[in-house]
Every structure is written in C-alpha cells, then in structure tokens.
Image (tube, rainbow, N blue to C red; front, side):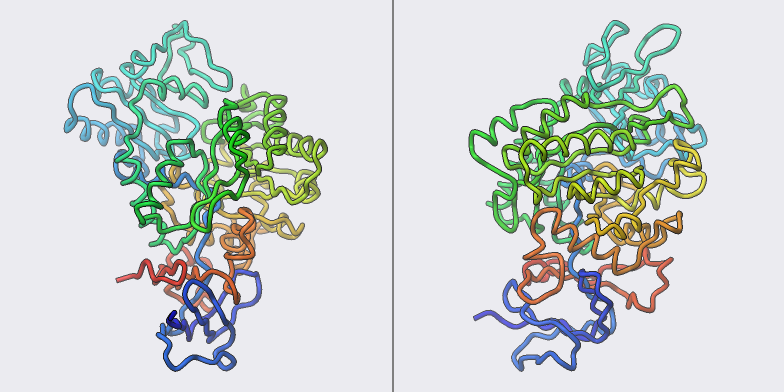
Length: 532
C-alpha cells in the first residue's frame, strides 16, 4: 500500500502563474499529487509522513528546456574549467599545469572562457597555445560554444593547412598576410577537429550522465531536454534506464542538422516525437540556422557593431533548412531550430510556416532555441504559428548588462530587442526556460540564477514577475515537450516532482534571489536529493 507523504507549512508557487498560497499543504500518494491547497482546507491523513517546510517556498521541480546534459556531465569529469579565467595568460597557466600531468600525444580540452571579460578582449589563437605543447593536441572552447581554438598539433592531425577550404557553414580564421590557419575555427569548421579527436568512451559517457543527474537534482531539477543527442547518446540514456540510475526525466532531441540519416532511421522505424515513457522520450529534431553572438556567427540583418565586416554565418542555406524542417514535420516530428539573430529567426519562422502550409498541423509545438534578438513583427508571427521559444535567461544575466558582451556586439539600439520576455508573455506566447549548460559553466545547472536574470532583466520593460519566471521554468517547459497534462505544476493528478527552496520568496528581495538554495528535490514522489 502506498504511503501518504504530506508537504505542509510552506508558501506554494504552483507553476501555473497563479498567486502564491501561504501555509499550503500538498498530499502525495506514490508518484502522484492527490490534493493541494491552503492548509486549513486540506485534510491530512493520520498515517501520513509529514514534511514541515517551515515557511519556505514549494514549487514544481524545475524543467530545463535547453541543456546539453550528457555533455555537461562528461565535461565536469574530463575538461579543464576555464570559466574563472580573466586573461589569456591565466588560460595558458591552467592548461600548462594540466599538460604537465598527461602523457605526450594525449588530447586535452578546456572549456568555458569568455573573452568579453578578459583584459585582452580577443580570442586566443595557436600562437598562444603552441608554447604550451607541440606534442599534445589542445582544444579550447568558449562558454557560448560555436567556436574553438586549437594548437598547431591539432591542426596538423586534422590536416588543416593554408589550402584547406572553409567547409559549408563553417570558417577557418586565417592570417591576413600568410593565409595560415590561426587556430580559430568557427561552426562547422570545428568538425574537422572532431573527425580526428578520439571519441568519448561509453564508460566516460555513463559516468558523465550519472554526474549530470546528481547536479540537476541538487538544483531542484527533475526534467531536462537534452539537445544534440546522437545515436551514441541515446544508447547511453537507454543503458542508464536499464541500470536504474537515470534519476531525471529526459526528453532527448537528436541532431539531424547535416545528414538525413537520422530522419531516414526515424521514418523506417515509424518513431515520432514523444516515443518513450515518462522518464525517457524522443523529443524534437534539432537543426541550426546560425551560431552565437560570442563567436559572431549569429545572423543579423545588420552587421555586428564591433566587427562591421560580418553579419554572421548561416549554418545551412535557408532553402536547405526549409527542406529539412518540412520533411521532419511530415514525419510527425517536432523541430527545434537554433536561431539567435533576427535574420536567423526570420529564416526559422519561414521554414516552420512552409511546413505548416504544406501539411497543416497546429499542435506541432515547433520550437526556436535561444530566440534572443527579435522584432515585434516576429513576435506576432511566433504567436500566429504556435511556435515555442526556448530561451536562456542566464545569458541576459551574464552578457546583457550595460557594457556587456551583448552591447559590445550589437550596440545600444539593438540591445533593447534582447530577450523580450515580458512582451512575449503579454502576447500569450508559451516561453520555456533552460540553461544551455554543457556550453555555459559560468552558470552551472542553476535555474535559480535564470529566475534572477529574468526577474531582474537589465532592460526594465523586459522584466517578468516571480510567478511568470517560475512558470517558464516549469509548466511551460512541460508544454514544450507535450507533457503539461502530467507534470510542470503542483496540481491534483500530476506527477509528484516537487522542489523546496530555502526561503519564503513572497518576502525575499527578488534582486537577491540568485542566493536562494535548494533544500529538497522530489521526483516521482521520492526524495532524491536533500541539503545537508
């Protein structure tokens, strides 16, 4: 017989956007919530196990709607963390210290630097890395991804010379005088290194997934949408289910960007979005149209303010994106298109509209990932087409401040278009929040940082309320994976994925909310993480 678990005495913010309920009570039986409301109304069974929240806040467990979850776990175990560096000099020092402990010839990766905060205000290059080692291939990537820096040994192994052409959708930076590769590779040029770098082992992938689950639970997160999964990643998740250590619900989103093989396989097997169960599902098919602002590869209708020679870089042609989106849509798949710049967003919307026109299906819930710099006209199109923007407020918290990387890249005028959460919600558009962790270690899997950034958006008219921000990180995330009927809010009949926070957020200063901690994380009615 299932035991009653009662969570009582806390301020409930239920994920629906409704006002908080002080002194609430939630009754859980097995994996489900069976009653919830003010404590004076809810009858507590005499045999129940009681969790007294003592005035703290109870919310639905967070849903991270855009994460590179498995990658995050692997990186925490294998990669040099460069997120705290303040200069290229510090990067060189950190990499040198690790290289000294490695065998000659072994690969070393470092991740997480942000040159917009450095004294040099530039990317590193092979001239910075070659003095560290000419025997060990080195790969360094920034926190925003879409660019890597390698040393001469890595270039040599990848056979990248002055004669190597830029691959479609990619760019090899070159010395203006000699035409030699500088070691800076953007977008699809990174695949030239990926082709020769030893792949992640199955053992490392499984260890990384275990680590990622622990991290997610410690931040009050019970569900994730993992983007960029391939067949190897799917196998890792399946093994995790079989061995019983997948502790969070995973909506995995395979990458079918540059090959039809994934789509061919899904068509042959008859698999569509939502194939699976409550813990592991196939989600959307992921495509790219542009890159990142950090790498200056997000595509804009006007050039970059700090590099006027470029408007960004299309990952594929608009025509090719449209073809792939139409095919995925016809197969019954949800699509998730990475688009950051206003021109990239425009092309993504054109592709989605073409797919819907060819085969009308309004409950497609096609997504635009990031969707950062957009016009009011594009917001109206998003609503009209039923598109779900999957956005990352921690980007605003880190780069959206006056003088930050966004203003450096865009200038003050375009900065006002940056992540307009309030306008999107006022249009009744379903906005889902995520962290993009795996690429962004300065904000490790931390939805509370995302809440703080959205509530305290540096552009006042883009700020949203606490209840709205929590809904974007819970119920709206469930909607983005077609799961709003079973999770994402604390309501009778829903799965008991519940998180307790360390403060009463009704009275807590919202400008300090990023200091709030997670006290307890419940998944499926089980307490899987508890603060010491």
